[in-house]
Image (cartoon, rainbow, N blue to C red):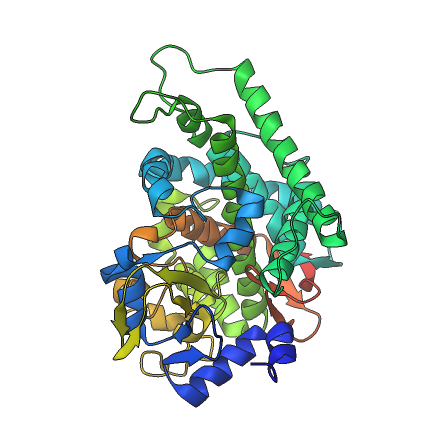
Length: 438
């Protein structure tokens, strides 16, 4: 481990890839405390996340550092506080809500095309554009808030905060947030900006509260109306933590997937042409009702998430003794699961490094549900802690790809950027592409 420190800091994915190649699908890393295992066997991963999920918790360094930004929101909450919160926000992701999301996606795509029309033929940063678009969608869809004017600032604050989270997760000795180090100053400033967005949402909602008997309009209404078992309402901090969690996790992950999808399509012209033809066959802008007519576009999204899962690594702490693929794992051990490696497992995936969207289609051209729900495919996690926003993210991704493909062409201006594994997998230096309106 000491000899590998520079590699771990520079390219942790390469380090984990080498560990699996040298030591197999369940490998104990030479870390004294806690005992730490890299688990990439698909069935062992399923045991950790699904069949024996109750024996594994989220109280790990990864989620503890992330909670410096999100607080005790759904993403970082351990089991005790997670279950009631999950039940609370689940209605915001029902089908009726997803139909509304499609309209917000159309509006965000329209705004982006207007901005790109002004720079037609120029090089743009597609990564920045997808971050802004996804933030606008999550603001309107979940909180009924227009974040258009604040999108760039909030996107930058999110990235700044997550960069510090990564630095803190890699430090051998934690530095309290109260100490004014450069990283802590950046983190506090970013959190203040996110908190300011929350305050603005709450102030705006106070000006137009729900009428007596009126159903909840979005997640924000659900949070403000929620009651605990004892009849008490959520504290301002609890409301804040859930909102910031979805601002951060609800847009950065989708934006990452869309960025890599455009890069993959740019370097696979036949796939791009097939997606464009599918989108052109629609009668109008892509909507929720059009999803059955966009199987190839959905397959592109599925394959992108296989090759570039936004959450490239997840961690769990064993709450009791267990056995994973024949290897004893003691209670209080740290288990590292890397979707990046599981998605490239040769026992499951044919030609795993290649971009082949058709692998997610059956012979009739319909989407293969068996692969999209298999133990070896977990871009949104699996089991009881499956990402609550999965369906919204997939819907948004498909509609953005189809909506933009009908109206613009994005051309590569160089090689694919190097993937940088931070909280999500980001393109090193963004994704410059030439935009041309069709």
